[in-house]
Image (cartoon, rainbow over all chains, first blue to last red; front, side):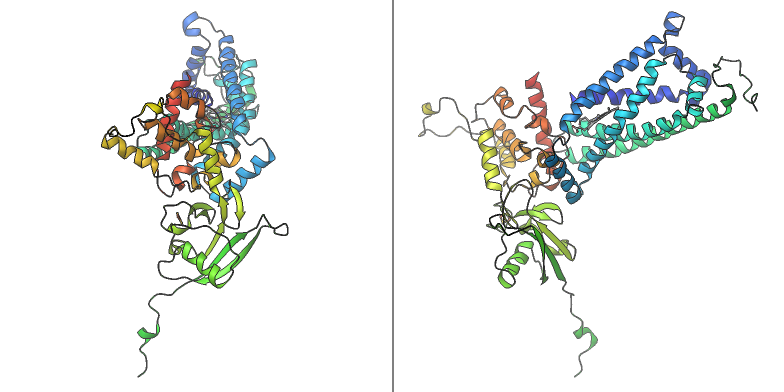
Length: 230
Length: 253
Ligand code: HEM
Ligand code: FES
C-alpha cells in the first residue's frame, strides 16, 4: 500500500511537471492546459470545481501515503537511537538515501499540503497571470522552490526503491538493474529539477513584469501592455 | 664493506596498526563501555583474526572475541569493522587504514567485548519461522527406499541459499532490523525462500504467508539493501527478497 500510494503520487507529480511547464511554451499554451483541467474543451465553459476535486483526490492519496509511512518510522526513543547510531556507523548509500526520503517526506507533509489546499480553495486562480502573480507578488515562489526540490528528491528515491522492491530482479541481472535504475533515477530527478526550475523562473519573470496589474487575467491574443505599470 | 643504500631500505615498510576496540563486559557490574587502544606491527597477509589473537596473547588476555573456523565458514567472527559489519577472519588488515575500530555486532545480545550471542537470535528466528523440512505423513515414508532424485539445477539453487552461515552481518547491516527488534531480517527470509524451493517441504504459500506475510516479515523490509551489500557470503539477498515479496503479495490478495 505504501508502495502503491507512492507510485501513484510519483506518476502524478511527474505528469504534473509537464502540465506546469507548459508556460515554457508560452502563455497561450498554459492557458490551454488550464482550460483542459477546467473542462472547457469538453463542456465549452470552465468548471474550476474539477480542479478542486482533483486536488482533493491527490490530497487524500498524500494523507494515506503519509499515514502508512508513519508506521515505518522510529516511534520509540530506542528505535530512534538505534537508527541514528546505525546511520552514523555504516555510511551505507541506500540507507542514507532512505533517511533523506524520510526527511523530505516530513517536509512534504507541510509543503505539499499547503500547495494542495491552496489549489483546492482557489481552483479558479490558475492561469498565466493569476499563477504568476501569486508566485511573484504573493511570494509563493518560496514554497514552490522548496517543494520542487523535496518532492523530486523524494520521488526519485521512491522510484529507485520501488524498482528494487517489485522490479524484475533475477540473480543474473540484479546488480546491473540496480546500477541502471540508480543512474536513471538521478537523471530523472535532474531533468525535473531543470524543467521545474525553468518553469518557476518563467512564472517569476511574468509575475515580476505583471506586478503592477495584479489581479488582471490573461486574455489570449490581447497581450496587455506589460510595461504599462512602469 | 659498507652497506649499499638499497640494503638499508626495508623492502616494504610495515605499518603500526592502531586498533581501537569497544570493550564492555555486561556480566561485570563495574564495567562500562569504553574504547581501548592497542598497537601492533602489521604482518604480511595479516587478518583481523590474527591481529586479535596476537593482542590477546601479548597484550590483554581478558579480550573477548569469537572464532572457530578462521575460514569464513562458521560465522562466529562477525563484528563491526570501522562501522561496517564483516567477518574478522576474512578481513585483511592491508585493506584497512592505519586506525581500525572494532565493535560488537549491534542487534544481538552482548556476551562481552566483541563477542555476541548470534546463536540465540538465530535459534529464536529458526523456531519462529520453523526453518526445517515439513512433511505431511512423515511416518509413512519408507526410510529404506532410495531417496527421490532432485534435478541438479534445483539442488544447485538450494545449495546457493543454504550457504548462509548465520553470521548476523545482514542483521547488523539492516536499518529496519536495527529499529524493529522483531523483524526477521534477510537471514530469516532467506531461510523461507530456501524451504519454499525444497520439494521435500510440503508447506504451501499460504503456510509461508502465515509466517512472514506481515510487517515483521517480508513486508517490513524497506529495501535499504544493507544485507545485500554486506553479506560476507555474497548471497543473492535482494533477488530472494523481491521474489518472496511478490509471492507473498500474490498470496495475500
Ligand atoms: C505527506 C507527504 C509525504 C510523506 C510524509 C512521505 C513519507 C514517506 C516515507 C517516510 C517513505 C519511506 C517509507 C518506506 O520506505 O517504507 C516514503 C516512501 C515513498 N514515497 Fe513518500 N511521503 C510523502 C509524499 C510523497 C509524494 C508527494 C510522493 C510522490 C512524488 C511520494 C512517493 C514515495 C514513494 C514512491 C515511496 C517508496 C515506497 C516504497 O518504498 O514502497 N511520497 N514516503
Ligand atoms: S571464524 Fe568462522 S567465519 Fe570467521
